[in-house]
Image (cartoon, rainbow, N blue to C red; front, side):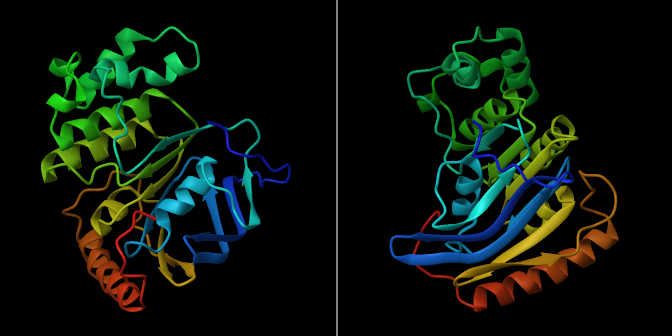
Length: 257
């Protein structure tokens, strides 16, 4: 998908959200929000549930319209988007779901590449399985493989590893970091350690209406090792900041917005 373009996107930014105002069901989620995604870097977004993280991703993906403000996207850049829900087509096999983007564009699916992608996410033996036969974590891996299959310059991911066990999560974080090297990635996560492993820039979204606060990110390219002592120290600091953001009062009503 290609979100709306703006002719004045800055050369070092793949995406820029400026003066953004957005509400959902009568609640103003953010107003005057500013966010710039650096070209070829991972940006991680943390914050309480319901604060507007998913809505911001959907705005950038072109699935929601801002009430005010603007969205600047590098000319010609297209987006791959992975939602919180796996959104698999129940009548298609795992292989068919991974190849869905090509089919929707009227292209011949690259079966060999799709099979290789399923193999990379640990589902090489499940290519013909229908979604209802797969566990939640397996379905999420199919959705991740479908996102990676799109090979887009801008990738938006909403908690892509949340349904996975700890070891599988770590392995797929490493896989995504490798396959998406040099891409512009915005990752929404509730896991501060995940943000520290993968993020070149980290933001905490908090408040009502929400604003973005920058948090320190570790040095070195992702994926970083969890045992790194500097990472552990940053993890403790980030947990404290997230606790303070939660206490600041996001709407406690359950929502994916």
